[in-house]
Image (cartoon, rainbow, N blue to C red; front, side, top):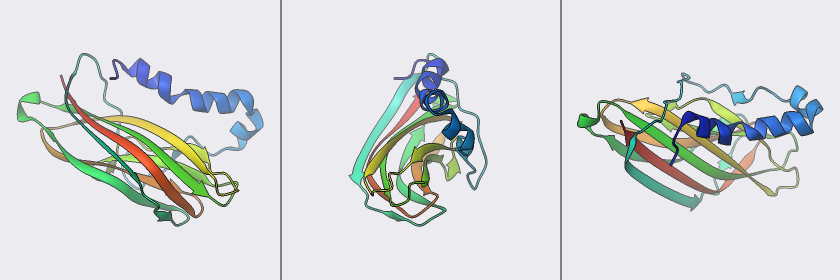
Length: 175
């Protein structure tokens, strides 16, 4: 369970820092850390002393082909924020594999809440040019009003790629 935004930042920032520390030339030539998603950008919700209401886990070997430059929905589920909660914090954790055939293939994991990107689509890196799998992880939060909400995630690929095995956790917290 996440106890604070500082824990979230501690898990989300290391990859970008490692890129800058160990490969300054690559970091300078890399695109921004976020894919420009086709809808609005929302600030992450803060988690403090919130209590978990529900958690749903999914996993599958999707095998979905992703055309160059497209966002493809991989998984979704419906959760409920109770009316007594006032608002809820949604937490989406995604671990996904991607394989490509181009060494410059950037890819991203894009969590969604009600068809809106939770907080952009951070780059996960490049897929290996030899067609082997690489794994990316994304954790994002969003505040929602009471009621039913559709949570999910999409994968983005700059060049043609194949989505592989994934694990996703959808959690709902209340103050």
